[in-house]
Length: 119
Image (cartoon, rainbow, N blue to C red; front, top):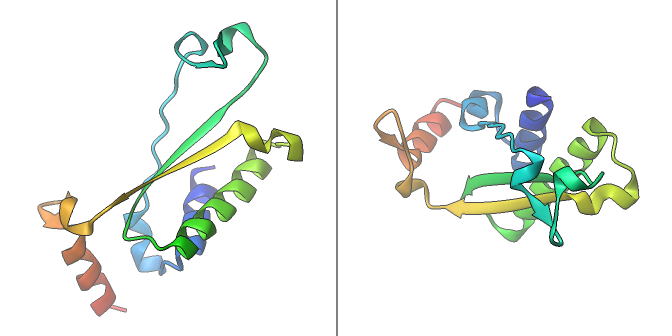
């Protein structure tokens, strides 16, 4: 599942294989007693809900649409969702400036430049 989600994001953003390390997938479980929809706890209903957060830098509208399209089709297939269940799949995109996020003491903007230079 992790590889397929990563591949979907890489396709949506046209990322090179050398940029695979920029794509992180983090699963955060929650209990049905901790999540409610419409005033009903998930533990009290048979309803399933899927919430995906995407944290990405400098996205235009076209890239956002591509990410949503790729993730929706990939997750619908992985979770075996029927067309009427797609509204149970929620995708939230958090956009950030690559100068506001660092990995290993280097800003993403620096890492992007060094990766682009090696292609």
